Amino acid sequence: MKEGKLPFVIEAEEVDRLHKASGLSLEGFLATLVEPTRSLARAPISKFHVGAVGLGSSGRVFRGVNIEFVGLPLNNSIHAEQFLVANAARNGERRLQFLAVSAAPCGHCRQFLQELRGASDLRILIADSKAETHELSYFLPHRFGPQDLLEDDFPLLLEPQSNSLCLNPSPQEASDILEDATRHSAGHHEDHSVGSVDQSVQGMNGMTLAIANGQGHEERANFSDQQLLDAAPEAQKLIQLQSLALEAANHSYAPYTNCPSGLSMMTRKGNLYKGSYFESAAYNPSLPPLQAAVVAFVAEGGGQFDEILHVALVEKAGATVRQADTIKLVLDRISPKASFRFIQFYDLYHENHDRGGQIPKPSPVMISRVISKVMIIVMITLKGDSRLEITGCNSGL
Image (tube, rainbow, N blue to C red):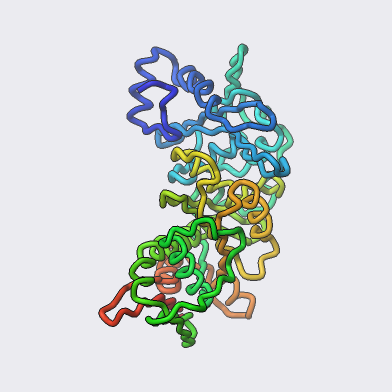
């Protein structure tokens, strides 16, 4: 396998094989991956391509590049080190041991890296003519980070996050899914537009869509047999899209605002990607969920951003930090025909606590059990009576 063809995640066995074949030290070998990684950057504004390579405790290697978006404010850019960390997070890596980068990390990234466990001891090699290696504390000696704001045992970035989140779908949201699916199955891709979450279902006659929102309330909309048959596969994908967004929100790292969020997107080819919101103690270096999903899109070989067809955001109801408006702004520029669906969730633990409920902070095991009860169990089943049911279930807590 040629270095230029290496994926954004190199498995431990392949790392070991390539390292031995290189005849170099491990750090020297990792430095040789920086330049071919750098060539994968998408920097149409600055023309300054940055590559970053990281070794995880699993033995895997993760690559990262900078991404810029023409026509948008620069703060929407993705830095190479952010890309690398998000890439590691989406692949379940728990700790980074070493980084090799094409240029010294900017202040933004020096701050973002503080969210990692043992950040001050993280060794970073600058792959230039000097090839110097320093710990992160050398680049940011007087640091501010999670150690100033969080308990010592609080799970940091890359460590398991398990937010107790529950969706509360409305009948309109379920109808929107079928309407989007019907349009797509009919080939009307051009009808999609950013923010098209209030689509009408009038004019569809025949079969019944039964929608329960988990509160004993049910509404019905009529659809023809053929429309249901044609739309069912696409509707399943859109339901999966929302489920992925919820999953991403459940793994979001937002300890400073308690405003986790997650985003998923589907391309015209039906490929699905997701991204979680990752906060920084300094706020501004935080990585939004859309950018995290773009990392997944690029890392898995995605092409132009206008391939994105559907986007779903799951965000906390009444959040003080909201992503939706900014996401619509970015989508309007990078994929203006994409549909955007915004879904709110409810934080079971904090809402009970705010109401004075005396409940313990749930353990990861408890959270997983609660989520299995309260997470929306969305089933699309074309039954013998031609009823398409989309059902949401609430917990019996």
